[in-house]
Image (cartoon, rainbow, N blue to C red; front, side):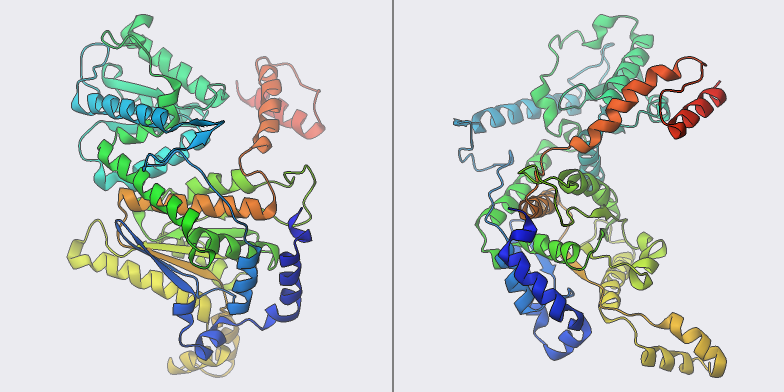
Length: 505
C-alpha cells in the first residue's frame, strides 16, 4: 500500500488543506508557555544527555498525534550489537563471527599503531591510505574528522576517493612507499573508481619496492580478509580501538532507544515524521543539516549519501510508481560558516527549508575562557529563534526610526528588513562530541531514514539509480582512446565527446 492510500495520511491531508495555513509558531509560543516542554525530549545516554527540541516546527498537539499515528512499528537490526544478544540471519546467530572479526581488527590495529606492523623495508607504518568511494569513503572520513581530538598517536590517515587523478597524485606526493599502508575498501571490489585508484597506488608502490612480492610484507604473507575491510578499519588506525568500541556503543545505545522507546518519545521516529510532514504536505524539497561544531564539517556530506542514496526512489517495494514525494535533497555546512553563505535563502528565500541545528554544550577547545564557544552557542540559539519569530513590519519600522531614518528612504528600505519567520527547525543539543555521542547521532539519523523509507513504502537498501551512469561510462570510455569523431550518441553527447577529444591532446 502506498502512502497516499494510508487512511492516516488522508486524514492529515484533509487537516493540512483546511487548517495548516493558520499554523503560526510565534502565535503558538505566545499562547502556550509550556510549548517547549510539550515538544521536546531528553535522552539520558551513558555519555551525557541529548536534547531534541522540536517546538520550533509547524505542528500542534493534534498534528503530532496524527503524524505519530502514521508511524509504523519497525525493527532495525544492525551489526552494532554490543550486548552479545543473539542476532539471527537466516536462522544463524551472527554475533560470534562479528565479535571474532572485531577482535581481529583490534589486534591488527594495535600492531599498526604500535609500530609492530612493518612496511616492506622493515620500517614502521607512518601513513594509512583508505581507497574507496561512496559509503567506503564518506563515513570513515566523517568519523575520522569528527574524532580528531581522540587521534593522538598512530599513523596519519589519508582518503582517496575520486577517479580524478589529481586526488591520487596529490596524496601520493606526500607519502613514502616504505612506510605507507593502503586499505582498499569496497563491498564488491568491482567499483571502477576504487579498482583504478588501487591499481595506480600499486604501480606507485612498485616503483620503489621493485618487487611485486613486497606488496605483502615479509612477516605478513596472508592478505586481510574482505570481512575486515567491511567495517571502519581505516578510521580506527587514527585512534585507539577503545574509542572505536565507544563509537559502536553509542550507536547500540541509540539502536536500543529506537527499538524500545514509546513512539511519542522516540527521537528517530519524531525526526522522521516531521520530515514527512514537510516533504509530503508542505512540498519541501530540501533538508539542511547545520552542525555548530567544526569537527562535524563532513556530517552533512555523509548523510547526503545516507539519506539520498537510501530514499531517493520513485518505485515502491511493490514495484509501483509513487504518487508522492520521497527523500529530500540533504545539504549543509557547519555554523557559523553557513550563516555567511546560504542562510539568507533560508530566512528570506521563497522555498521552505526545514533544518536541523546541532551543537555540543562543551567544546573540545575552550580557548579564551570558552569565548569562541559562547559566541558559537549564541549564534546557534539566535538563528533558530530568528527563523521562528522573524521580524514584523512594525518591528522593522521601529528599528529604522531608531537609527534616524524616515520618509521615503525608510519606506524604500522597510520591505527588505521584514522577515516572515515561521521557518521550521529542530535543535539537537548534546553534552560533547565524544566517540559514544557521535555513534549515537549517526544511528539516530540512520533510524530516521529507515522510518521514512517504511512510511514511503520504498526499499531504502538498494541503489539502482547509480547504475545507469556507470553502464554508459563503460561504453563511452573506449571511444575516448583515439582522435576519431564519434556519432553514436545523441547530438549533445556526441558534441561533448568530440570537443573533449579535440582539446585533450
